[in-house]
Image 1 (cartoon, one colour):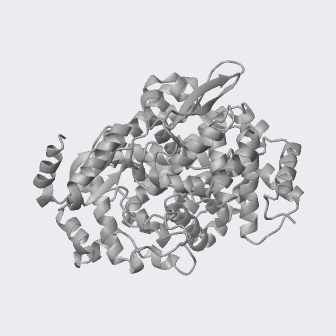
Image 2: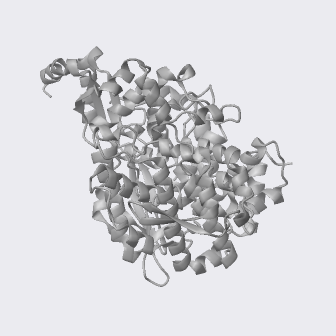
Length: 426
Length: 188
């Protein structure tokens, strides 16, 4: 007997309690390409530092869908008039785009490689002429949606009213113009206050066993709203003045999670070892491209496969280091925000360490880097005044992008490395 | 002074300082974002940004991250300026010379004509105009990539779908202006 296309299901979630899924979404997550996310850990080898951090992209993807829905519904309720007058929404359009936002959130990480962001350094170049410009996981996500989910998206009975195609979700994920008006909601998937980071801060914090990523997410969700157009710029997402402390909490949570977890000195060096081990395992040292001919092979790469290869002795020296937890050791680091003098000092460290220097890891290469937080805050005046969060919050004003750089050597060289740095007066 | 991490980052920082130094008064974050977009997409300057399209035009958070570092290193200074209803950031050159990184020197020289072009064509325009023009270019390139062609009116309609808050005559005027400058590829 066919299932009821309008039935809903609930899945337990350690962050929110329960997440509600439609029959359509349930069918989507049952597809093999989605189930693969169960075999990709959210924080790569972070469990070598925080043993509880074993959660997966599957769990996070469901969480992002849930969070995006809370944000969307709040915006819709608080800003209905602007959505109508500036963006031309009616009730049907808003209902339709809620479905789209949920699907985009659900799919946003479908393109991740093994061990999540740690693998992205090995994504192939988009163009051979510019090797530094590599594909991003968002491109893989969009292509996987187009190639592996076209049928389940287009032909589910619940899609009768929406008439979505795989391209509608893929275009939104990639930020393609064909997404049209729906691009307004892209900030909920990839923006300063997006459901992705709002979920991963809470979830990563919970599983790592730290409290740094906690903030009052319900208050953020309750106060998120659309800014009226100002100075010629169109409407965008912001937070009403009553919620600026919760937005401040979100920014602080990002800062603390970055410094304490994501850019933890030992955690990041395991990313380095993984990248080098993977480079030995992969044909030509990089992942297949997100093209129809190569995507199938790409999807065969997940954590299980890499762990199997490592267990069988693949991955060279770095594979061995991962298998035995014999990582490089940090011997020097710049401050979070280095000055010109600090960078001069770094240069002298490099010279002194010479061939002992095995790895140099800059914060700016981290996926979770801290950028310029600039959340618009909408005052309660009539007409409202829009100001940046940093105008309200001296704490946010004081947070600068972290550009720390760490230097690593082999464990057996640590004493000699320290001797050389000490001789410099460090 | 030495490079922070990569040649690419160095080049970007020097370019940001160079653009801010050459731009007219009032050059802000939106103008910087869109000028970098035009340089990469229209002129092919290899900056390595990944711009995605939003209602407010092409955007990559890495630009703001680079700007933050440029401010920290004294290449650029940023000042918040409020006006009735909203706010903007005005960027000014810092005291540190823009050719501070040896590796970036030749990069700036190599693309000097492109830098001058973007300053002349776009740096003095309003945030609204730049959002419109960059959205237009983004849609034009997306259509051209798929081998399709459009009329000016069809292109304006597509921009209006992404930016419904903008009046159609305003978009049409920008389409004509970019077409006259021969910056569109998908137009019949």
